[in-house]
Image (tube, rainbow, N blue to C red; front, side, top):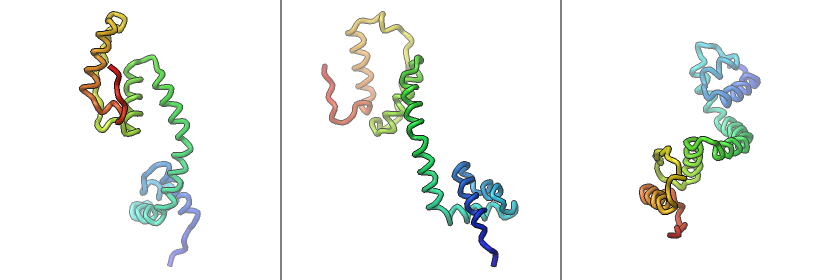
Length: 140
């Protein structure tokens, strides 16, 4: 019976959390290349809870950074970037039950009256009702 190498197993967990690739993680942890595929699969199953915990810890560490990046994107000078960022935030929070596809017209809003802009907004909302959170009522 082979002796368990806790150092290799621990290294496998770290490598797998960083790459998501079982075979490569097994090889990088010092396991034989010939058995790396089966060993990677075995170790991934054996340490599923530890891997999940480490991934959760890793994700918690980058959540605030991700939020800051999204906030910067929402304030970007490019309308397409702002739109895609807002679309992502809405979808991630369940306000859109399908992907939202909109084209950005490059016409200046200054050239249109308030009534024209309101009409355009009304049309967009009618075409994409999932953009409006449930319970929110629009004022005409």
